[in-house]
Image (cartoon, rainbow, N blue to C red):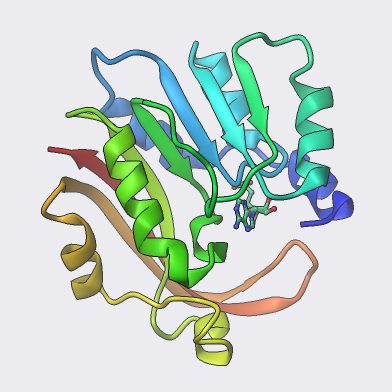
Length: 192
Ligand SMILES: C[S@@+](CC[C@H](N)C(=O)[O-])C[C@H]1O[C@@H](n2cnc3c(N)ncnc32)[C@H](O)[C@@H]1O
């Protein structure tokens, strides 16, 4: 994501799904990982709730914006890294808001394993995955993995309880203004 888009997204609020996830959060250390954090909107909310936040993003512009935005906050750490190489520290909450689907598909399942290993029992994962008839999946199936509800069960339900699932299947604008056909699964999962 380039600086213009990072700056535009900085004007947005954190996603409501994050508040929903925190309702299920109990009695664990306030440590979170914000994966593909962009302008840090989710990180800002988590910091306001007392979390220590480890945030990473592949984009140098995300790094610039977050460095400036959180320069006085010792509870925020930014790593200029990608899903493919990030060494997940232990954390009670992991959020990948509109980011994990950009991970190289050949690394996807190893990233899921690293996420599972980083979470304790009761830890929460908030993640968006693309559905099988998302425009990007249809156009570039080697670059984007599309999931059915059944696939999501197969991927997560040995290790997690599914607390929330919302499926979006509609045309919505990207920040650029381009109207895209989204097929998206928004998930809150709790490690067993
Ligand atoms: C749509 S933005 C979402 C930003 C933020 N999570 C939010 O919800 O506002 C996607 C972010 O994922 C980052 N990203 C893309 N591919 C990545 C990768 N392989 N590893 C880490 N971050 C990645 C982009 O740089 C961008 O900041």
